[in-house]
View 1 (cartoon, rainbow, N blue to C red):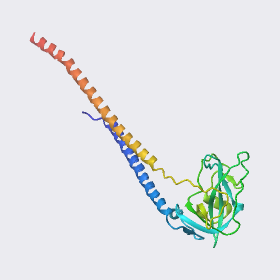
View 2 (view 1 turned 90 degrees about the horizontal axis):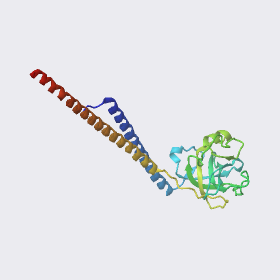
View 3 (view 1 turned 180 degrees about the vertical axis):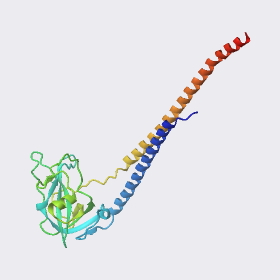
View 4 (view 1 turned 45 degrees about the horizontal axis):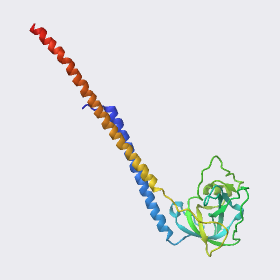
Length: 260
């Protein structure tokens, strides 16, 4: 069977790429599983103190943390489009001035939105003096889909998203490079905010699904290549047999003429 070089190379390239992408998705799934195991381990560990010394995000993310300081309610930001139990609302994000210097953003919790007037903020309580806050270090205060500026101009308190670095540049506050997702006060204090946070989802199943899809495409390419090769071989064999059958009468006629 004669192998056609160009189609064979194309099929091999497709198989190599899809197999490699499948392995990449598998590796991503393994990384997420390792991260999920770390998150579970962090949940039972002692909280790490947050102070004036900057903490790298990669070293502190998902860890339990504890910070002592005073809230700055005049710097509050309300993150819009954060539903809870199918009810629209805000996340209340507020800087905490740390004892000893420095600042950290705290996602204090969820607050329902006034359906009739979006700009009307429901009442909640901000402790006036020093407090001890516990929570989980996160890269941001959650992200929602944002079309255009999304109301994130500096003079607006109601925004769609809030990046730590951008807010630090806007306010001039030397912020830690993460946000504390508050789980409570020490001692407990009722401020009227809901802190029933969603469990971090690493979405490992999606990566395994993509892995199977890529490997399925590799198998499909192999099957198509084998089918095309078999079809080409059958066609070549049929044409060869037809050619031989056409040559036999000519040889017979030539032999008869020679005998005459």
